[in-house]
Image (cartoon, rainbow, N blue to C red):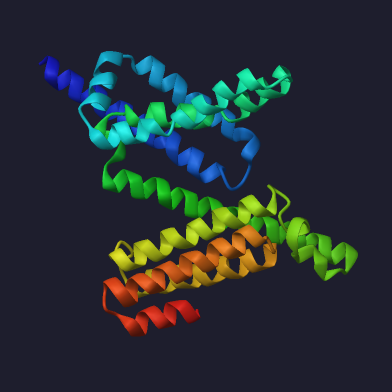
Amino acid sequence: MNDKILFLSNKYIARLYQYELIALAFLLPIYRKVIPYAIALIVVTWFLEGDFMAKIKRVVNSRHRRYTLLFASLYVVYAIGLLYTENLGVGFFDLEVKLSLFIFPVVFSSLLPEVFTPVRARGVLWAFVFGVFASMLLCYGVALSDYIKSGSLTAFYYNRLSVLIHPSYLSMYTSFAIAILLYFLYRGFIIGRIRQGLAILLVMMFGFFVVMLSSKAGILGLAFIIALFAAYLILAERKPVKGLLSGMA
């Protein structure tokens, strides 16, 4: 009976985490100022869940969870760096800004296995893709309004286009969304010709959006993703035609 109650509890906790992660993934490319609140909600859920001994055991008994926890060491390095700075105010502010570098590895490495099932993980990735799409539509809508008022085509370029967040961040998010779509297409997670066609169209729209954002980091990231995907098709999968077509696209 207790095992059944625990299973149901874990099931609902995992679902709550899923909703929170989906909200975080969707909002990340749209409005970054709300992200700290979304992260805080995940942390509160983590604390309210309790059962910290079980969390520790999950990390200790799983090598990939320990590897995930190692990412928190970067934050520890930043914290140690405070010993060598004279401006502690700026240093503590920098630690506050980078706090997610510590929070995410600690929380994610100890979550229930039910939280990161393949289906739920794909749901979070889809939420990110839809968030990028919503951000793109909002940016184009504001740019169109700006163009109607000013008559200047620069409304569709760089920081005048990216009105929500910095164009470098948005272009990198968009490049990552392209990588997600290419992965889903390759792995057969997008079923049906219509859906596959829409996904390919979305990849092209995202690619054009990255170019219009004109961020060097975003364009380089996009080129790297396309080159990597094309190289994988040519070398690993022995599909040179598809690989060359992907690279030229």
